Length: 134
Image (cartoon, rainbow, N blue to C red; front, top):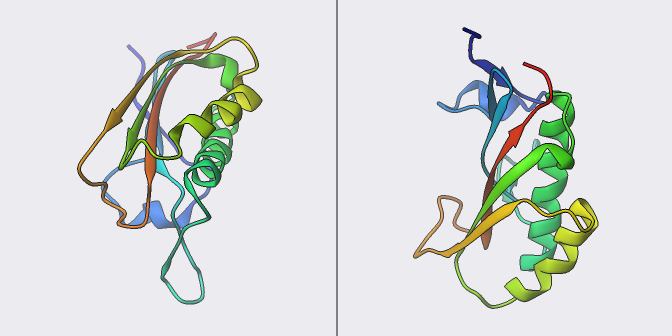
């Protein structure tokens, strides 16, 4: 049986957290909840880009880096789940989804939640990918 492998595109912040950006087990890749927040390396403060659509695009760019570190692409993603603070602005995220998936979409869920861990995040996403080789 294959061992669990941590996938990290080189983000230092994960050195002190108790979870990985993603974990691969066999041909399965589980991408942790990802939001648009980043820590500014100078001030140490959280930086969030724009409205929900811009945050969504930033999330996809971060997921792209995780996929690349795992030797995967968006075509390998089979399921996503979006956690939203509000539905306001969510309709605009469909265009971003099309940019990254084209016309071949994975299964998906969208859930409105009371709160997210990052107080400035409007949306967080996790994903599951199945890779061609174990």
